[in-house]
Length: 425
Image (cartoon, rainbow, N blue to C red; front, top):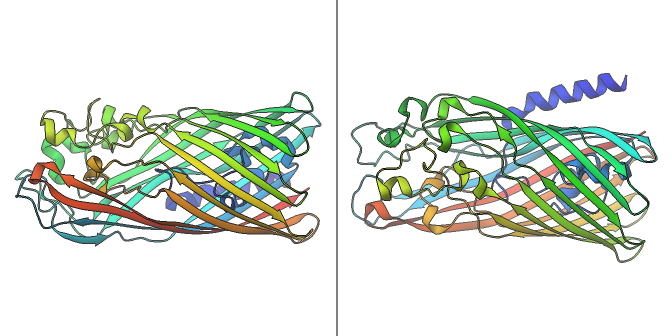
């Protein structure tokens, strides 16, 4: 019966992932699991829930036998502004402020964990890993002085990822637990409205308006949890680069002939039990965007050099920098039924001002997250969890050097509400 329930929930999660996206710390989720999200994504050293495997697989032995499922409603508000200045050139953007459509996205998750014995556990975790989406109702690049391809509308991209991990945790001794999680990943992408870039593509037939293309791959996450004493614990985890098959239908857009891997990440942190009821969390995360050419290559080379084609190894990317994220969280066990949580995270700059032009398609400017949430113990086996997130608007001002220094900006702010239910057995 349990296997049938697991299989059914897995099917629902996979079916709903066509709407999944994130654009928080770059395009990475700010946390995995409802409790972690209420703590601004912190918790690498604190066992919380089934989806803690996405943060640190070593935590899973201590979360116990459980099944977790949840759904969030994520609302990113994306826009760009082009100023009415600069001389006319190839890359002129029509002046004005424009907002992206499609403001609400459902994002489900599922996790199951089974304790095998006092030393080990195994489970399954399924969720989105990241993504980005824009859909501007206008032809963004219509003003380009380009006789080779008139821009169509709408203009935008849709990129999402789904991962499934099998976390295994092993207790080495009373103080140390290690974990490993093989990851299988799927992602899908489409772009539209980019016709004016055709003369600068190595494969213009695989540049835009080709519908969704899919790629598959995987990697692994490893983790460690160390218990120093009754008050202090430390945790660390590393997720490898997820190597994906090429998006062949967009090999004329993405660097390295359509390659779009997921960059590696590293997280380290601590949990301090200040009182029996209050736990303080502090995590540091590093996201290595520069190791993936599609994301890390500069976005202004194609215009400034006039010789670097889209789709080649050195082709235009989004120009994102490696980013560091500091996450703070506090958990208060108010009474046996209610637990309250809050958090705050701050990330270093992902998009430099020189890269603003092409990032109209992916304005991942958000750097701060303010979160809160709670858990309610319904009965001895069932728990209801809630998380709320607000990411205040961040704006990146930039110039367009190909049009006599036309100025403009990209901006983004976000909201998210997530509800999860946990069953212990």
